Image (cartoon, rainbow, N blue to C red):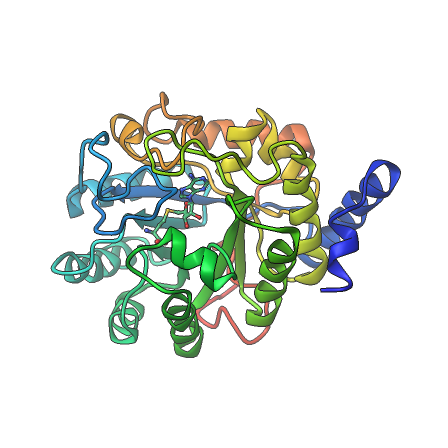
Length: 341
Ligand code: SAH
């Protein structure tokens, strides 16, 4: 904590030096090539009521959808056909129940047709047994942000879940040997710099394979939509956080998350130059994107199909960073055991 807080306060030439150092550590441990994970937001059905999130159960605005297995497979086929992404990320709201068996079936079907494609699932808290079933069906990785490391702030924002439960899920996933991604939002209302530093340290403690962090964006359709980001007056903090995250987790996959683009038009490009090494283009079928707005200003919601595949190639070319070949498994030695790369 003593080491991290001063880094979160640097400005001017020291800030430029922090970014340069993070970029150098990223280059040394992850290389220049950028693994691409195409994200398919296959359902916005959700039984949770997280106070910040646009698809929370109480929000009447989004038209609720759940793609059929055939529609999901068609979207995966488009991703595979574009030949850019080595991973598909299947994400949805949190709706445990009958759909969990359907998820196992779709994992199995995707692996049967596209054995070389890695699959990441991101559908919230479940029992260890359910995670084990999905792992057996072909799930390579799981993304579950802990959102904040502060138990009181977590409790205020999540009516149906405690921080301890969320962390237990992450422990279960790691224990099963699933490549596990954690992370948090930067600048939740009520977050202090001490909490931000603790969030960064918790990522190191877990030693996650992937770590997704991005700015909190107030969503007017939620109960905390009027509360500004804690760093609204100092958005450099979002990049300080990415840079420090890289310094303390040299070998983790760190995506340039979509929320950076909602704040700055070139936010994801800047993140890739300040510590991030992974890009996650949207591959949700175009017409559904407007109903998966976790926050306003999400980019690409007018585009169709996997147009983001072309866009990401141009974006990375401009940065002088090649697209990584292969599934982009964990860089940590003991993980990614199904990897052949
Ligand atoms: N239901 C899944 C997926 C959640 S959506 C799960 O529980 O893991 C993916 C991420 O979007 C969340 O983990 C959260 O960190 C982020 N998110 C939600 N609302 C947001 C907002 N208003 N601003 C920024 N990020 C947000």
